[in-house]
Length: 123
Image (cartoon, rainbow, N blue to C red; front, side, top):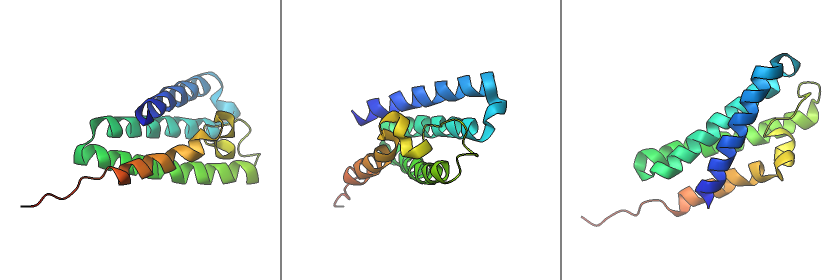
């Protein structure tokens, strides 16, 4: 289920950013570039979770951490400085346009990574 949600966000955030950047980039370049960054982070998290293993877990861990920092920083800035964010990003207002899923998702992702960490084997 987690992989499905990340995959959906990877697709939707990337598609949204692509449309925003190619059609009206000059209106809100910061917001649209941040949407692009969010899309890339969701893609990386999806790939990391799907691949698994040491490398996949590391990719997912880094991606979920960047996602958490991004949604907290962009969420705060989009409320504090509305002029800098004339159009919404996935992470604006803590993901309110997406039912706050972008705020909750990195916590669930990080929890899942921590909960499913490999157990040391006895040698």
